[in-house]
Amino acid sequence: MSRGECVSGSEGRFPRSLLEFQRRFATEGACAEYLFERRWPEGFVCPSCGEGRAWLLKTKAFTYECAGCGRQTWVTAGTIMHASKLPLTIWFWAAF
Ligand SMILES: [Zn+2]
Image (cartoon, rainbow, N blue to C red; front, side, top):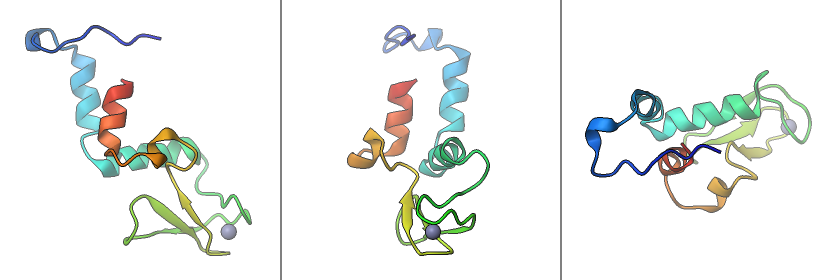
């Protein structure tokens, strides 16, 4: 566990890694992409039928629909982020 120090009010001492971190996860899309790679490092695998192809739904955020059985899977499923209405970026930055 390394949560670091509270850095508010000391901008000059922001670690370089935090800047890189924020740059990398600046958007919801970047966060979702990271979660996708963590969940399926070998590529998408349907938890229901094992199908390896899925469509990224445009209508629902971070939701993949299995090309085989149509089951929808969230990249945030099973995590605290899924139950929250907070933007993913907030969670990533809070976890840093
Ligand atoms: Zn499936």
